[in-house]
Length: 118
Image (cartoon, rainbow, N blue to C red):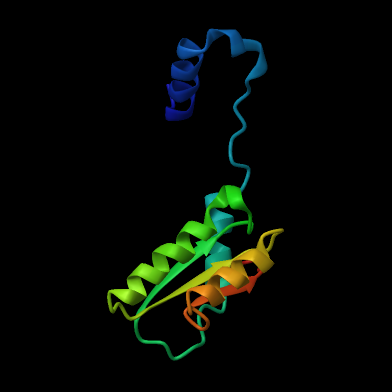
């Protein structure tokens, strides 16, 4: 049994009343397509020589970028030479821009916006 089916079985064993309310939806993006697209991307073009962190996801409270910004602040305080890039767009952009300013992370925590092939 594949790992997805095992997880579904474990969930249904724990919560049997959701049996008729669940469905497994497999990722429809082919690994070959992902590998091909990875070779097409332009990558980073800055001259930064420190540690880079990349987050890809919708800018929303559920995704937790606010926690990433706070974590980045601690990394900078501890003297790490790091930049955090965040690909994605969403309803929390303005709030995150303000949080970045509050933590003096301009140029260190970078909201790149939407990118079809990050």
